[in-house]
Every structure is written in C-alpha cells, then in structure tokens.
Amino acid sequence: MAHGMKPPSRIGDTMFAGFTFLMAFTVLVLICVVGWQLWAGARLSIGKFGLHFLVSSDWDPGNDVYGALPFIYGTLVSSLLALLIAVPLSVATAIYLTELAPRWLRQPIISLIEMLAAIPSVILGLWGIFVMVPWLRVYVLPWLQHYFGWCPLFRGSTNGSCMLAGGMIIAIMIIPIITSVSREILVSVPDLQREAAYALGATRWEVTRIAVLSYAKRGIFGAIILGLGRALGETMAVTMVIGNTPQIAASLFAPGYTLASVIANEFAEASDVCVQSLFEIGLVLFVVTILVNLLAQMVLKTFAGATVKQ
Amino acid sequence: MIVNARNHGRRKALSMCISIFTLLCACLVVAPLGLVFFHLLRMGASALNFDFFTHVPTGPGEPGGGMANAIVGTVVLLGLACAIGVPTGVLGGVYLSEFGTARFNWTVRFLCDILNGVPSIIWGIVINGLIVIPMKSYSAYAGGLALGCLMIPLVMRTTEEVLVLVPQGYREAALALGIARWKTTVHIVMKSATRGIITGILLALARVAGETAPLLFTALGNNFWNNDLAKPIAALPLQIFAYAISPYDNWHRQAWAGALVLVAFIFTLNVTVRFLTRGKPVRV
Image (cartoon, rainbow over all chains, first blue to last red; front, top):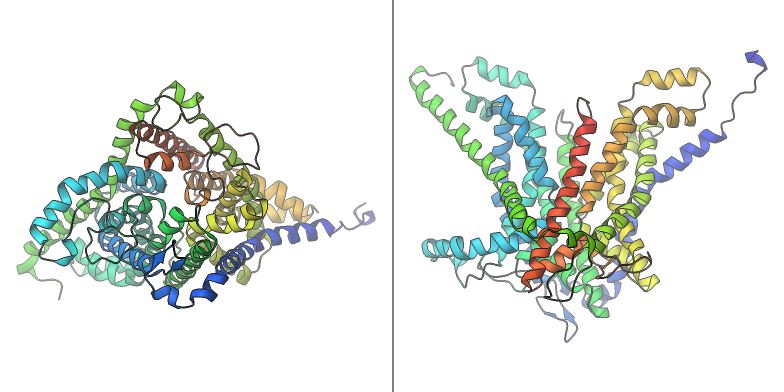
C-alpha cells in the first residue's frame, strides 16, 4: 500500500527551515541595528565636533560643548587597574583549580566563582557604596598614603569614591570570567604534556610552569582580553563607586568617570546636543568593545584544541 | 636540566609555596562573595518585612513602604523579555543545530559571542532611540525588548548546544518512518532536549533579571502600581539603584532588602538549573 501514498509535502519543511533561519539571522540584524541606531543618534554630534570630540576634555552641558577625553581616560585607567588586580588572582586561581588543588576542593570553589558571576552589577555597587568605599576611606587609602604618599598615584584627599574603588569593583566583576575561561584553557591542555614533565622528575609547580603554562599562554591571553572587554563596558557598579567627576587626575584617589557611567548618569536628563554626544560616546564604547571582543574570540578560537565557551 | 638531586628539597618547597600562594589567591577571589552575602543578610534581613512585599514605596525619607510594585514589575519585564528572547533564541538555535551549514553556524556563533560582549548600557540607549522616542513614553515594552535582546544570543547558544547532543539516530529513525523533517525536529529532537532548552532559558533569565543599565532609559522605573505596559514600570534593580544613591537611611535599608530579594530570586533560578542538569552531560 506504500506505493499508493503521495510523497509528503515539503512546504512545511521549507517554511520551518526558512522561519528558523530568520530567527538565527536576527543576531546579525541586531548588531547592525545597534550600530546603525548609535550612528544615527550621534550623527549631528559627529558632524559638529568631529574627531576633536575624542581629544577634548571640555564637558560643559551649560554651553553645549562636549568632549569625551576624561571618560575615555577614566574607562582606560579603571579597566587597566581592574586587570592589574584581577589577572594575577584569576590566573593563579585557575592554576590552583586545575593543577594544584585536591580534587574534592575543586568543584566547590568552581561553584562559588559561578555564584560570584551571578551577582548583579547593581548589588555589587550597593555593597561597594556602603561597605567597600567606607573601608577604603578609613583603612586602605590612609595606609597607602602614609607609606606610598611620595608617589603621585597615591596623593590627594581620600574621599573613598575614587578611581581605585572603580578599578577594584570592576576587578571583582571580571575575575569570574577570566578565571573560568583560563580554567577551561588549562583543562584542555593534553595530559601528555604533564606526564612528560612528571617523567623528567619535575615537581607539581615545575610541571605547571614548563608543560602547562607555556602551552596555554595564548589561551590565557585570550581570557584576559575577554575580561578587558567586560571591564570596558561595566556600568552600574562602577557608576556607584567611581565618584563621577569628569577630570583627568594623576592620583588614583581622585574621582573619575567612565564612558558607560556618563551615559547612565546623564542620558535621561540631557539636552538634544548632549544626547547626541552621549550616543557618540555609546558608539565609541560599542566599537571598542566589539574590536576587543573580536580580538579575544580570534585568540580563543585559534587556540589549538580548545573548546571554550563563555 | 630539571632533575637535580641536590636541589630536590628546595624545589619541593618552592612547589609547596606556590600551591599555598595560589590557594590564597583562590580565597581572595571567593572572599567578595562571602562579604557581599554577609552584608546582604545582615542589612537586608533586618529591613525585610511583610510590608516590603505588599506596599509601594513611600515618599523620600518617610518610614515604611515596600517594593511590591517593583517585584511585580520585574516579573512583568522578564515575561516580556521571554516573549521576545525565547522564541527567537530557541528557533535560531534549532536552525543552527538542524539546518545550518558549518560556515553559517560558525558566523552566527561568532556574532552571538560578540553580541554577548556588547555592554548592556548600549542596549538601553539603542532601545530608547528605537522605541521610547517614537512612542514618546518610557514603557514596559521597551524595557522588555531590551532584556529580550540580551537573552537572544544566550538562549540561541545553549539551545544549539543541547540539540547537537541529541543522538543522530533519533532523527534518522523518525525520517525513516516518513515523518516530515519539521515534525521530526519539533516532536523528536526538541522534545528529547526539552530539559536542556529550559535550562538555557532559566540561565538567560537569571542573567538578565539583575540587569539595570538596559532598563534605565527604557522601563525608567515607577513609584506606583502600573497596569499599562505602554507606561513606565518599576523594576527591582532600578529601585535598588535609585535607593542606593539616595541620601535617606530608610531608603538605603530598603535597597538592601530589595537586593536580598533579587539575589534570592536569581539564586533560586540557578539552583533550579543545577537540579535540572544533575547527572547530565550538559555544560552550563
């Protein structure tokens, strides 16, 4: 009886495939829409201020004069500070978790780090305002000033809300991602590498240094770049502790401002020209984070044998 | 040469020192989690009471009041986000796993990763320009859309990953019976991966539930009840932010209570995910 049946219609299949294709295609559409909307919003500002916008440090809503330099500076300094704190801690933790820790301890620590990653930015910011900033003001900053006051980085009044606080809170936010990606990189290092080094009589640390780290260097670099991408765009927690003052100060104790924070703080009540400038700042942030993420993905995806997911 | 008997003791000691150093680093990494939890419980629990879940906020500095509207607002926004993010993400993931060519899949996965890296504040101003300005009002729709856009790449990646794990034999068996491809996909492939797909959705929800930046210029926040989705709506993260940077002690306490509720919600989602994936080879 089978030969009497008509072959099943393919229309359903074609429509289903077409529809799901559209859904998958939205990802590309979304990126284009975001880029286009940012550009459209910033067009007049780009025309009015030109490239001068990126190197001018005037931010004067009263006179409708805008320059993004203090924000670019604040974003770069706070992110680099965050990397300085987060990278050694994260990489050391990843090494501990894959090479040195007793097995029973590994999964609990991994779970705790996942929990840290799940804490929303705004809650970390709340903790920053009421716990970390007072602690910095009362204990850490005076101590740093007392012993390292000769260095211009640690001079000036210590109000608590400062570049250093911003860097620290960003560090807490990016530690989980750098740790987990580095850990996956280290896990993906073939055991043959380790066995060879052990066979030569190396100690645990020597195995890690000679066989594992030299093999995984490139991937860990990718993890760090990925962390940098997150650091540049971090918004709420930073806004709550960095002090929000558009200035370029040498001291880490001085308040600063970042690209993301100025959007968060000023967008809602901004005048027309100011909104366009903020869109331009958004565009700068968008382009920079895309470039940084592209670099990170390139490095991670070309890392031999790694199956890394963030 | 590595092997050197004379140095053996010193090398063992160095290895031990490094182990201890990295252990200390791991402790430092976990310390903020403990501190945040400690303060959340200490400050949040004392401010949490029945009123918090049943009342709307009071005026500046006045005692009492709660965040009932913000809790409901967050649920509404997450519902809207799911309405946008889940179909798009899941069906996109289906295409990648069932129909896509290797090159197309690579590109989409790559774009998903790039999209995940876009700062969430960018979504706030983009949706503001696309929806809020033309509609001339901040709205729950705009907030839901912003969160939904954040969910799409997350859900798409996890859906694809769980569908790829479905054994090829299932598809072949169904197709051999003459079942249309789309029916095979929906009734056999997706059905056997339901748990994994739900896991991915819950993870994405947990991720966007605490997002504040995309809501600042879309949902805006609201101190009162709001039944109109075309009007500004309250959300827990927004309320926490507004209260945290306010000068009033009472509002600070409310912010801690709100933070405790939000964290409890997010961790419940995460624990549910753990429960769903126990003993499963699903990578989350």
